[in-house]
Length: 297
Image (cartoon, helix red, strand yellow):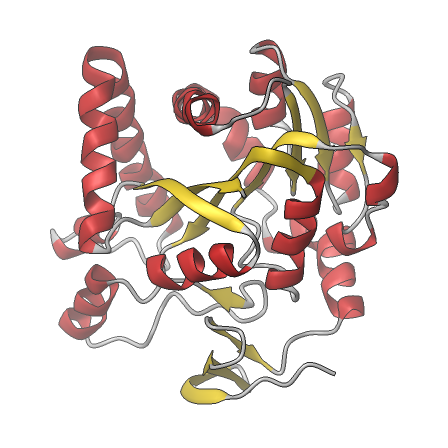
């Protein structure tokens, strides 16, 4: 059995949050069992934890299309393969698969939730309904890109997930993943300024907590070379400017709408400025999430 050991950073909901010296990143300890993860994502996630997730993704589709356009262009720029086969793990309602398919990719999604999988299938997408750990990789062949968007923080076996992704990629293929950028400098300022607890810790659904450095190291350990990274809008700025949306869903949607408008207008009138801006944020370690592009070596 794998050993986990490290400094305890926090104790939340009877769970220790440790900076694990063996894994190289912060995670919940003890980790949930495979059965617990399966029960959460196959049965409860979209009904209990995120009941508005699919509805709001559809509402945000115009914004997501601008995000996906950038991601696919970057994947094409850095991959060194000739095909266009794409596998997305944790494909949710299938918006990225839908966009990539329209762009000429042969797409397959892996999704544990029956609700999300059925929604995607009705859109004509090929979805394998299973946990990634149970995926029969031998029957799938190799891919030019593997995508994991807001997934790695949820899995009990982060390193093993990336190793599997590596095996599914052709040499020169690209993994594209996005993760929340936790323990970042702006978060720490928000916590201190508002005299609140470490608000980004949600151990029931977020098992792992990555920084830019820790996810970069992990990718390299799993046979990848990081080729590009960029951030998303630093949502903490809204809190520091007086719009504290923490625990306030209505205000959260309002400031999210402002972020969307910012992105969409920059995409329309100067997309390269937007890309440069978000790239530069990674040098400061800030941005609400980080999108990493790494090539299989």
